[in-house]
Length: 440
Image 1: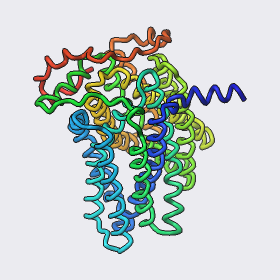
Image 2: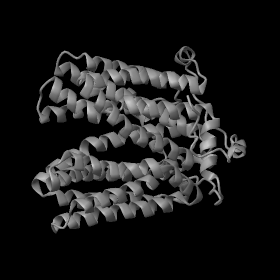
Image 3: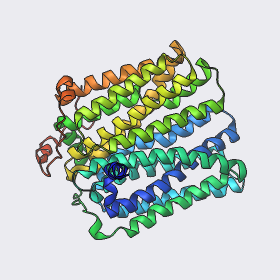
Image 4: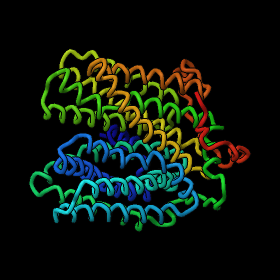
């Protein structure tokens, strides 16, 4: 019993920060509501058109603003009080959900309206996501920051499992509109949590004065730090080739094994269970190291390779859970390392660049993996994912300057960045904005 308590304390130690504990609880409730709206939005689009292409367009309109606007939003977030900005974005997002719920309930929802609402939500999310991650760094200062990133990722995966299940039950018994109403109400949890966080429970970073070239400064900050640049490129490559389960899993279940939609749901449940375990392991790392990061990447590659050659569904359930869990573990560790290495004065801008890479990489990867599956069969995406793991490690090694063998042999934790160490980045403020990060 004592060992279990120690293990739980190790995994959830960042929750000891009272401000982060309040914020995390609000975020979990809100994330479950967001996943409810995601499911309901898909059902609504299909009920209005019956065409998958309209569903794809809706997702694109929601994702594109996050990929394009996140870097600019990071500049804004570094200039203002992050709690105030989060209060505004959560209020707008909640209002969007409630308005869409009223339109659905009154039979006034049309495809153009859904498209417009998806775009509005994408713009709000582009501002909210980098601000939110930067705000966590104000609530959890020091070595527990990496743990907070992993705990947040783990709990978001719990919400990802619970939210769609509630949405399915709600849509079937009450109606699609109720999912939007519940999501709108869920934002109250975050708003209340933000109001409850006391001044003593956060360490606000100094606001940056408005001036030209701040986005270029953020890019230069990432480019000049090999740790940040290596992590950014690893994130991009990995997400493009390995983190495309929304495409690869349905094809494997239906085309390779000829199973039903129910089996497809079970496969994603196995993936979610693996994600929770992987997130817990990542959160248990008191002092994350490059060794932890590379081991998680290698295990995820092995899981995807095993899935590519799985002889039956039972084996595939296990290998998908291993691959998916290791990917979540890897991403949490890498995200934590990235946050540790950011100079606090660049926090929101550097985080926004990270999210831009994620949001741009996954849609592009979905198209690529879909093409690979069409040309070479439903097992091919998992082979591509295994190759993507190795390629991401190679790119990371080249950009960061760390040797793979040396990193795997060393247990030395990554040291947090000291404030101000990148002030010389301002000398590169005139670098062309399109010269994005350092090239591998």
